[in-house]
Length: 327
Image 1 (cartoon, rainbow, N blue to C red):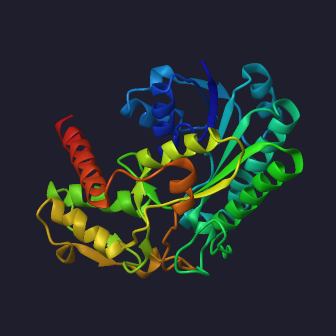
Image 2 (cartoon, one colour):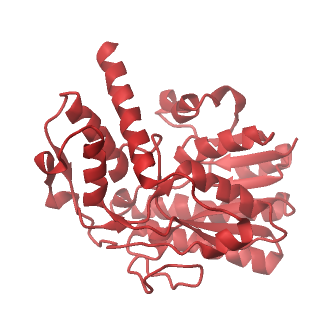
């Protein structure tokens, strides 16, 4: 039975990756950071019905010694670093925390592996936000980065540290430059879940309006369930490498709203209002990924369409709010 170690195991990607690896026969270990919100730990894992199958181990990405102890004790075959301060909007208000966790946290994990378990395989969750002010119409593994937020800057540092450990120390280390990927497990603070949650609340008569920022921003949106498979495929290759994971289709926030409201028979124009205070200090106008390398080398392709993903998210939020109303 192979063993994997996942940081960010209680997040959206960590939950879907755990489910995927359990189905592959892995022993799944997850890093547990002690916090005041411990009552909510594992909510996503419980949603997928896998919480009881995950072994949570105490540690913290900013504490190198805890990472070394975990690696020495459990000796995982694969390490997936998904943990981060991942909400872009919050990174302007918490730039130092974002750098400490998202950037230096990845460096800590790499150093822990180099010291305690250099033969294990490592996955770093890089981000399409690193492209920022895009330098090419379609962003690939060779497109120059132009980050536009503290979050994206931290991700660039983590990305290049991973590449450097691969090239300097011969580690099997891969970066997945994942474009936006969503699901019913997406945090409520992210615009896609904010939209589908708002649609559900409005449909059920719990709200009238949905306040959003820039409706013209365009993103390449896929489903997290598809994207975690790509993470695993990277670590099955003979050597580490970097891969863009994307659908190759870009959609505006406005169009996302239209599709979500249409799913419940509503017109988004009757309910969506824009608020200037919800816009980013420095916007990323459009992202569109070129995943041909992943298709060619990994044999990876997305399976869930944007329309099906939005429908799944809206239905899940309807169920959530109906359950609360009935409790």
